[in-house]
Image 1: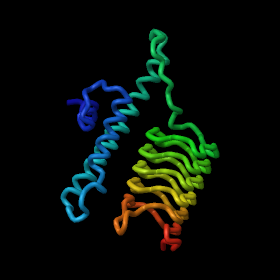
Image 2: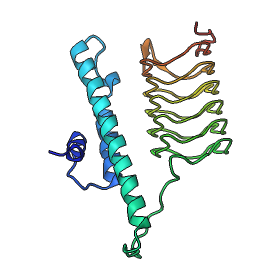
Image 3: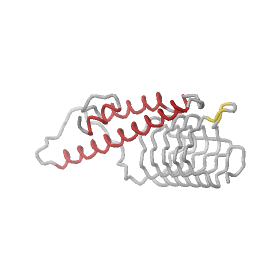
Image 4: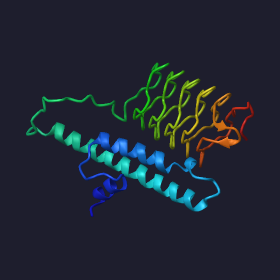
Length: 215
């Protein structure tokens, strides 16, 4: 089995699946294997879920990279005929600089913003539920009152970000840089249960929902 075939198998897909199918499979598997869905006292399943998520993330990133390179090679090839049927609009490239843009109240649910530069952008009240923002740069961004329900913010840069009154239930902020971020009034719990994943996150100097400053 080739490495590429292995990545498809991790996502439970047949080789050659479309990028849309890859993204959908990723969403489904993240939902199934999210550690928040597993009792905290079941250490074996917690570890299994974390290993699964690591493999799922790697498979999706590798397949996205492969398909991006394939599209570039197809576009640059002079012998490749242009397709005139059912054109699809491609999202901005990962290197796109979207810093300072105004997306207040925008519906960005289920979008793929992984790796984008959205530093100091206005996302006040935006709907970012189930949005994929792996390694996104949101430094200094205004995310106040934004809906980040089940958003994937793995390894995101959220330094000095404004997350006042944001809904973070089910969000994954593992490995994120949250230094100086303002979480005042943000929703992160249901009763006494923490419903935000913060494994490995840097919270130094962050203002917590109750107004205290994290040491």
